[in-house]
Length: 247
Image (cartoon, rainbow, N blue to C red; front, side, top):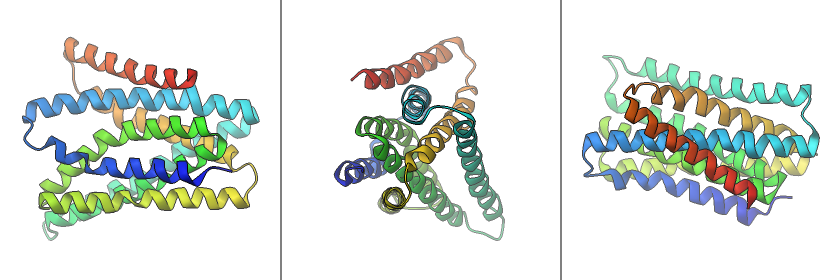
């Protein structure tokens, strides 16, 4: 059984990351764009590393990696695709002449709340498998949340929120991660071997986020120097997860 102290402590740290947007205020826009891309590169590497160096090896060690496990990884990828499509569909239908731009900001918060709930579910499920895996998953989620929360903060400011209101609402949205963690712990108490379902689900989610959301952003930059720096930061992200695997 997972230790609730570690689960909720990790979720609290991830939730506090939602306030990081305030650190970007006053940064030159061109410098900010470069910094964000490097963070995205680092995050992509960490998520790939989390999936292939922690989650899938843990799954294989505890349960083996057979046909069912492969299907569950694919189910995780498909589920994240469906969630993202649903969020983007609502975005498209809210940004119309009859709707205020402010509505888009609120819709972004709803989408972020769903995403954070799933983050909490993944963190809780990882701690059920082992303390070490829970820590590694938390680190990967944190590294993914940093560029995402900075982007969400910018979206809220653009949609008309004041700085204080954007920070407050973004933080409230982040707290849904606690709901996901609680759901994982409750399910774990009723369903035996819940980790068999949550580990490949989490791995699929990490692979989808890194491959579908983050890598395409990096492909928009074509200069050799920028691409090389992105590659280095991605390797740094993978290396961090490799170090966690050893320690």
